[in-house]
Length: 78
Image (tube, rainbow, N blue to C red; front, top):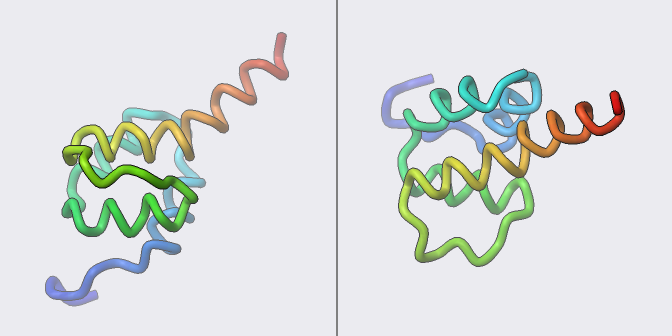
């Protein structure tokens, strides 16, 4: 991929789906631009995030993808 090309939000979402920790997801998303994060948020079904800053976008996306899955796994183990 060329440096001027934005990554495909679906590809980024798939990569997040394979991650096993919030920290990994946060580090991975922190490299993305705010515009890319907004596109990714839409891809994963998040809405109403227009006023959020980059760090807040990253947190919401991680919670909606990796965090949700980790929480569900932990609850099933109880």
